[in-house]
Image (cartoon, rainbow, N blue to C red; front, side):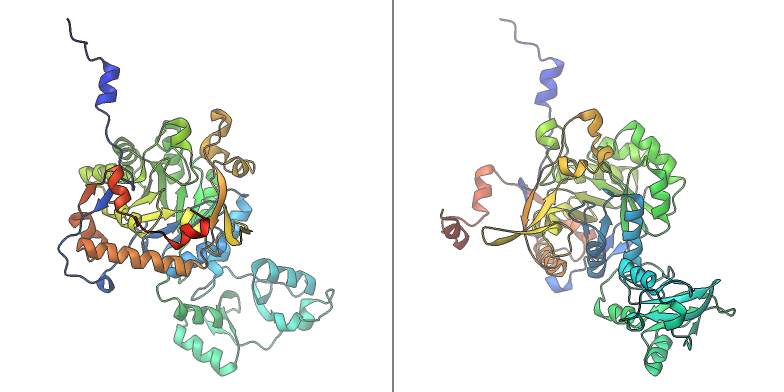
Length: 489
């Protein structure tokens, strides 16, 4: 009997790689001489921007808007503003992040003497600020605060209530000098003017206090909080408008390894000054193409189809699990000598998964589910069965795509199928508490590996595979847990 000849398609199946996920592997304990408190988890988000913690919130409309981006930057991480909104809305979110705290606010919101108190109040409410410098033909002539407009008639002119006797400072003033002036004159806002009296900036007492309250915050060269925003490679105008305000732009594409997408990104990079993180990619070959075709790329967003609200892999049977994708891309970068940070995106459930992603070659981890649970996430808070939950939806879900701004991420018109779901996640409180838990767990995990920083984790960590039955042994077992009695199981 002639043996069956092994053909191309059988070989394709039999030679298939194993795409490991966070469920399949654990990290072996190694010889350690480092305590968790001694571990340094500072890292890079891009070639030019550092983070104090390797955590980034995902650009999803139930995860990252202004409040989340501010909170993440104050904790030492990064928030990526979603793009499922108009350009004007996204730019305004970026402006608010930059105005949240600063050494000197450069993009100062002002009012003119001839405007009404009603107009001034609207400006304060819109920009969430408590005072407005009054400018006439570019020259500072007064300042209007909340106290000035309280109970005032709306149709009064600003000039009638503004404070004209101003305390100002010159450009180049130090923080210590500004603190002395603010204290001496018992004022909360110090306008910065040039020799001709033109307004050049603003220092506030609140911003000085906040710098002391958040010592781990990541800031740009001017002392403002670091901020990132999602873009489409095909929307150059949105990218150019955001480029004026954000430090990092992140291409928001489900499958970046596409000829047209790469071509569009090449053109976009030529017109953008901010660092650009591209993705999502999931293979060695995709990393090769990005490295060879896009010289100005500053970071890679890696992982396809692993998100908790993503159904791409289930419905399309196509994807690259985050852990496998990170290792594949990291190998490509090493082989080509490319020093580009990797952002592991998707499927991260806890601090152990963060450690695995970093050990596989990532510099930082992007998460949606973990941060959607927080107070600062824009999702709706609801009560279900006596417990609090927050809304969470994928950007490929029907309701997210109904806004139409996210359509090109998943090419819905051409694919004709949703690639995300929507639901609810348990409410966890403030971002600071979630970050603290993740950071503590990450440092403990790195301590088991004997790594005192992320670079050492890349070199020292070792993985072992866990069988499906063995995975059950790694979790609490043979004991009735309180959570199970509550569910009646």
